[in-house]
Image (cartoon, rainbow, N blue to C red):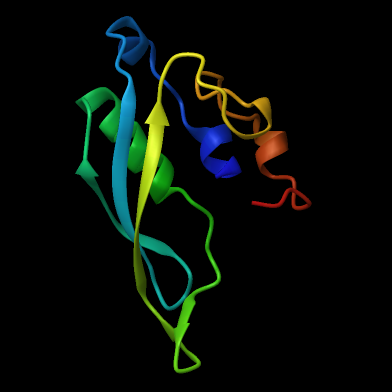
Length: 111
């Protein structure tokens, strides 16, 4: 959730149109932990739907799900909130600019 809060960009066009609400995105975490098959299940407007899909597709690799102690692909649905000045985890706002390259490449940062 912190990754989404730090990397989701609420575009100027979406702010101008005052688009507010949740976009539901479905994705699959494969046997290797990578995110794939990202799609918008329930969207608001193209401006925010594209951003929600982008940020979920860019998620770092997860620890894969297991079934009978064997790595297995799992599908999840995630709601992403878009609203001007909406406070997210740790006081991070969805309207802020994305982190700098130096911050994003910090190996000590946990997702």
